[in-house]
Figure 1 (cartoon, rainbow, N blue to C red):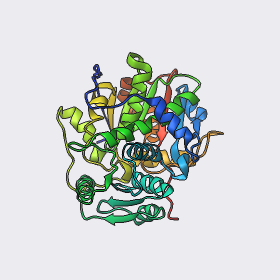
Figure 2 (cartoon, one colour):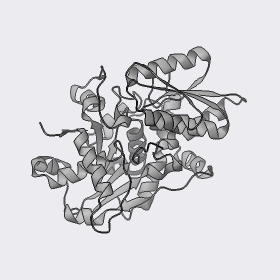
Figure 3 (tube, rainbow, N blue to C red):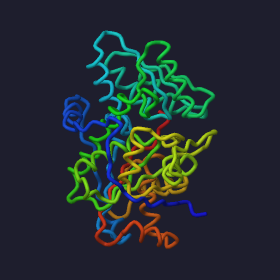
Figure 4 (cartoon, rainbow, N blue to C red):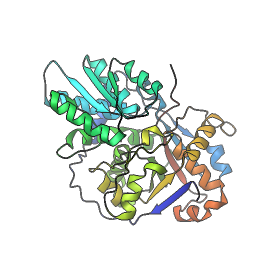
Length: 359
């Protein structure tokens, strides 16, 4: 079996019944008000695009976001802002489950504001990711459960101790904070479109639970409506819960303890508030094995000609790896045709994290 599998989707009208907000100006103005805020770069990989016979390949590089090496600070910072605004007092403890980047972002923001954080991580979490979170003063607890069971454990822990759960996936009766996190991610898409010379024809975005993909697609949906670019949602094959849920037309949870090097995408249950949006507005869903993201990481470090060299981690590089593999490997000619790639294609992907360092 080939390491890439694609599921085409018939887009439908989206009816917002899950409480997603559309005040993108409030989100953007908040981020701009942060002293740490700086627009992250967008690279035009024109030499690679020329080699692959498309017009342009644009990479939005989130490894520079807030000095955190990943995009997650956008969602965590906005969610905490809303919690504090709606529940003003002097003593907050924030709780979450993470594979790495979300927990680090939450710990960073809580620490900057002078508050405590307790971060739960699933079984098998790498020590370097644990230390990266502890650096920001968080208490980190690695459980003996998978990601989704650890999410539920963290939620019960927060409720029992009257702490604030800041999770990027919705649970029964818990949607406002995840929705604020989704909205926080819209700034990334907004910046990217503002930096591009022309409207993208194709946008590819990674998904774990689907919060970041939801934030990007929600912004695109509101900006372009029925003139939405072709949008592909990419997951790691062992945990492709969104792909399988669309394919089977029911909510599919990936149980057990699946492994992927794309730790930030190692989530087996879709965010219930963004899944209907993705199902309605994404053009296709994609599963990739780890070897595809490794190819993307290599391309980031070994650019063609004067294309930009940049740092891309396991969860960050899969979009770039997917695009190059599909455009260069004739085993995927049928996928190229389905995606509508040609010499006029302007492709946008998101480098959601840089390589995770041991320091």
